[in-house]
Length: 182
Image (cartoon, rainbow, N blue to C red; front, side, top):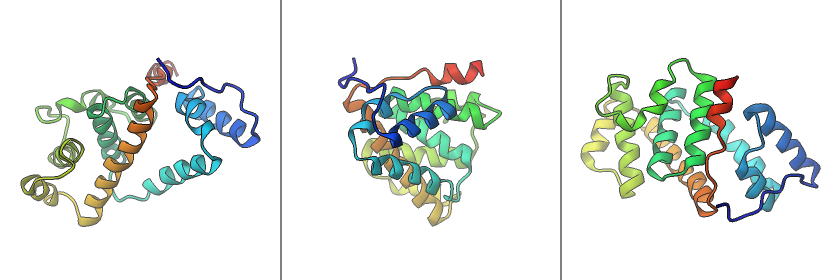
């Protein structure tokens, strides 16, 4: 059960605009916007948007970014984050099965060795807050130093989103269902 009452009709014109963008992009106003972002200074919404814009500049394949986010959200049990990441993957990519099977990456032929190395790296960083030398060396075979920093950023920023949602019991918004209908 949600710990905060959603604000359905914000008074701020800037928040009204943010709600409009959420509806346009995702088919509805997402629960974190109605519960969390409305209770933060508006600069946080701009900050979140700027993070998304900056992450596009990371020199990593877009599919890998999505896989890492989904996997970290699964480990952290953030149902909202899993749902929104999978919904965005449905919008952006053709082979969406992988985004629903990421937990089986070790045994699935649908993942490349580079993706497996990145997901092992993400797993250890998420669970252990450290990466073993063996896992690091495996990742170095596939990624540059800048790319490894990018993977680490994705893990760290996903934790931020996950913790915000988990703390206030924000669950899935059913965004995958909306995307599949469209």
